Figure (cartoon, rainbow, N blue to C red):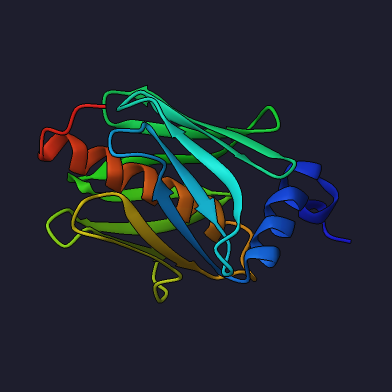
Length: 173
């Protein structure tokens, strides 16, 4: 067993990623609700991502709990099981985050106008894609279920996309 599989935090991410089979949907719970239901392929709710504006968010899905926190004006961290599993900071603009997750570097790119985001390990192909509807209320995420870091990156990109679009289009939550 590898060290990553022995750690219960990483095992929870791996199990959730495998159960989602590399895809999930996120839907706002109401017109002005600050949280999104996380849905599996059958449309069953498996978790919740509660937004706290630009300050962060909280995720609950099965036995997994994580928190996204703003660690500096444009830097973020994701904490799960008492450990920092993700750090992100922009490279140039806010829409080009550099994300370090589980000791792997991902290059991200967001398009606020198209309501999309993507990321992949540095120098490799894209392994995470987020696409959203016009109203900022429905999203679809596709990630590499075989890569333990792809799911946290997908959830972070969902958070960042929604947060930056709300700010850009002056939506108050």
